[in-house]
Image (cartoon, rainbow, N blue to C red; front, side):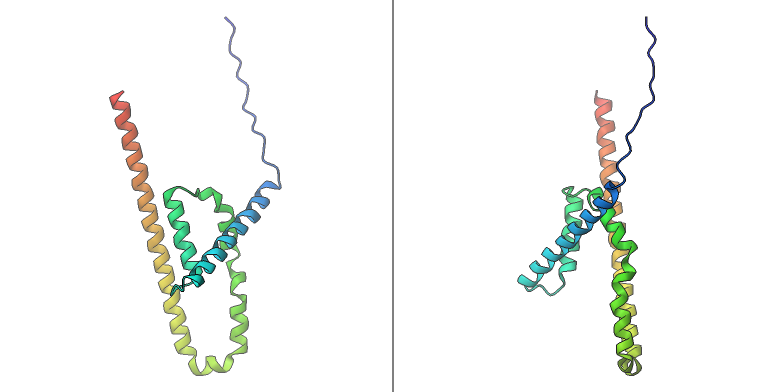
Length: 152
């Protein structure tokens, strides 16, 4: 009987251009989704921005399993890593409106602080809820798999 020879598994690495291309594609998809959600929010005269509509829709699609997290992960990570660049216009406006800051600065900063805290809390609770929901789904799936193994 011939001895089986084990060959090492050779995995072809992905081309170097693939990850940047996927990142650009995913950022484009996220921007397009935001643009469509913003257009829908405007057309429907909703009392909140298209970003909120898009976020809600994206969360629903992720939870339903219609969008895999890996389909937007690179683009979302890139946007988060470069988020500071999106706040540069805010810094420019602060420089232009120094008189307003002198008269209403405390009120403005208090409102900004409360808004920031609200967004962070809402995000934290949403992430926690989604993580718990995913854990429950995984647990139910494992329990079903164990039950099927016991029956067999």
